[in-house]
Length: 152
Image (tube, rainbow, N blue to C red; front, side, top):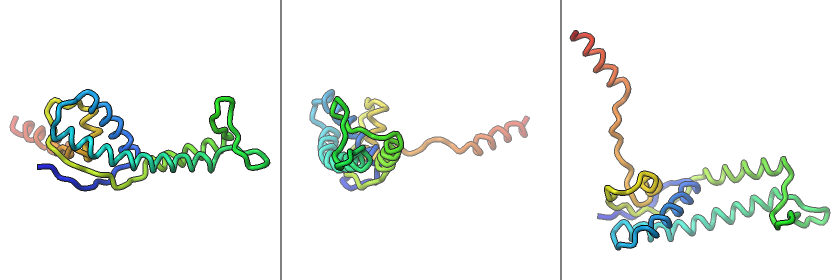
């Protein structure tokens, strides 16, 4: 049974999911619950992605170089120009933005066994449930080893 809700993810996670979703959808044409969930969540995540992109552009405008008349300075290729100091500030602000958490859509379905690890990682939380940890704490392994030494 599918479960639709929201999940807290970073903008970086949203971008990774949309990229993985588009790649996976191109390779997997057969209709399935997973395909339905991926299409649905990717479409909603593209709106979040667009909002983030607008904020990135605002950061660019805030830190780009301007001339004496407050006209934005561009290089020969039409890219914004930045001073070294403002480029560092812009990059820091963009990293901060990409690490910001937002409410992202989620539509959890059962994962097929043959799903690639990179795709599975990108889909986790969006369309796949997080896997339960099966790793034992290190102390438990030490206790077993100590018990074996005591028995010897």
